[in-house]
Length: 189
Image 1: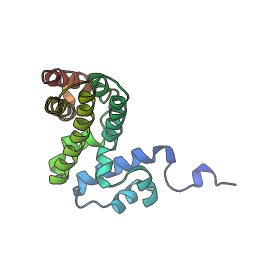
Image 2: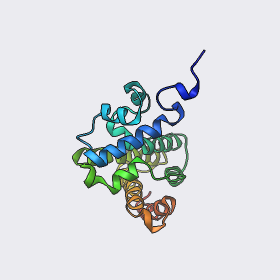
Image 3: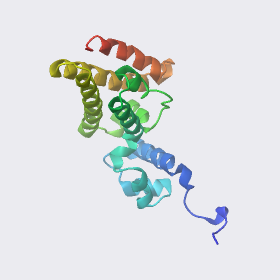
Image 4: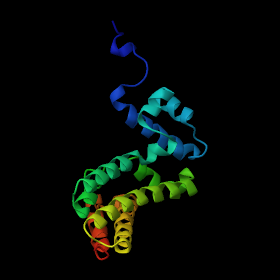
């Protein structure tokens, strides 16, 4: 027989992911990214180390997991035959400000440096690879597919950055991404 809910320690499991992300964001702002450890995050969040690793593979993953999930769905959609624009537009649907948006707007305060840029490049490369494969499958030559895919991948990341940086402007991420994809479409096969 379990203890009453009021006597249990720790946070409810349903909110652990969000609680960990919130704690990490607070600590990154207070101490900086490099000076914050996973142990610091779990202590602030009131969860154990195993709970952290149930949700995140690394400290960096706290910032990127929301976008990674969306890119993963886009990769699956593209592999399944979805149109490029439709698959990429889905990345922006219902994307609420999260740890990534907080990091984008406070990268300097958090001390996000070369690792930050490398992590962004990894995501951009994932999108580019999935789009290029799709274009080649549709009959585009390798060079054209790679150039067009680079434009689309750049559009996705640029839209997320622009949206997060200008969150107060009232522009929604789907609107910003739509404009960016219009620009990228000029390079499409």
